[in-house]
Image 1 (cartoon, chains in turn red, purple):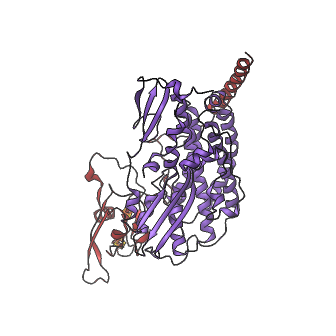
Image 2 (tube, rainbow over the protein chains, first blue to last red):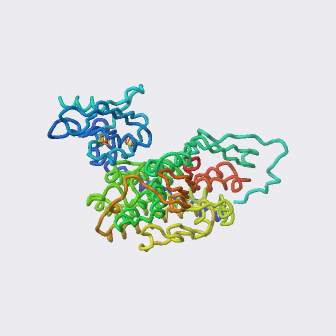
Image 3 (tube, each protein chain N blue to C red):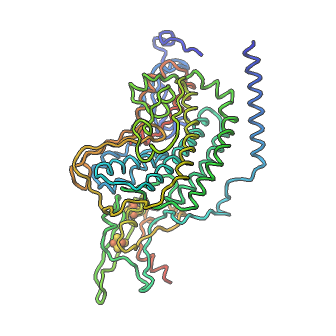
Length: 147
Length: 375
Ligand code: SF4
Ligand code: SF4
């Protein structure tokens, strides 16, 4: 009997404390953002899929097709092919594809690149029902951005 | 509450098999437990792990040291930092790399933030198991602040992969340090809110106190570590018994509760959040200047032949990497000692004769991460 009274009293107390905290919270401002009407800004270092960086002087990619990124990638996502064009000192890529289905966004490729020719994008809206939507041709993407 | 002795509850042929999982709201991830039930009582609980076995150890043996680095943050996705720490630690110890003090401090700050966020997930999920939904929202509100901070410096919210051999991959900026200080100041009153709202709640107390005993002896026999053994009265914490990184330089306590019931394990984790806040505060105040990664680190890591070992205290207990190198670019053998696996293995013995809801509460108090069990 004594226990029952004790439990009822402390039970009632926890109820009051809980309700007070909940009501307190009720009048606070919401912490969530109503996506997609509002979207959060991606931080500077956000890791989206990789893309090629343009050389500001020539307008072409900074990549020298050294294949370091291809070797460093733990999941074999990158395929690079390059040739040495006439009149140029360095090689340039003819093909640069990324299989984003396998990419873990680890950043090894970005870190290993000797010419800083790769960087992360801030894209995260990438839903698709087809696998082929994630096979990116990064060279074409770079050209597409030119126009 | 006393549990009837096993002989009494074991009827001759009246038991039945109950499958808990692999997809069940009370188990997180794909854990399957084959329960032999006698009415409401568990007579045997057989964990069946392996549903998300990803061969992390084998993957370690067929890729370079650098290439394995991203894997380490995916073994236990809730405490990625401590796992990466153990892996870079073993390579640094083997190759004799001196890590700059700033990097060590940054590692401590980020590891402790990660520990808090992991405990907050456990807190929310555990109470969800017990039938309380609201605390999860409070916990995730706070956790979100940590994720935002860590996203700002690492670029990722869960699988950080922030540490590199010899340091970390990016320096921390002022915004992060300011944000961390604000977070510590914000979190202290929140701990009081958690105490008022949840810890002192009579329903929670009744469901956890004196239920789910896991003795220190049982922990030792199964190799259970982390909050499980500290909730059984043993002050075993890798940060103290084998101090690694810069942990020697901070003043903090190891919370220990001798009751060995589900409530003790709950209280250990709540107190650990407070201690982690203390460590973070000290580390941010005393953060030394200097490089954040050792100079002249080779692009491809090579480790001299030998057998090496490095352990860290992850949120769930002791995580250790044993690496055997034959001097090549690829490790010869990588053994990953995962805390959740040992913590789960005692469940069969500990749950014998318990009522199902109590056994589930105890399972929740073990704080299991299934990818960590399966690896
Ligand atoms: S981010 Fe990592 S997984 Fe993705 S392409 Fe680069 S190296 Fe490969
Ligand atoms: S590492 Fe850099 S330069 Fe070399 S192939 Fe890759 S993107 Fe091009």
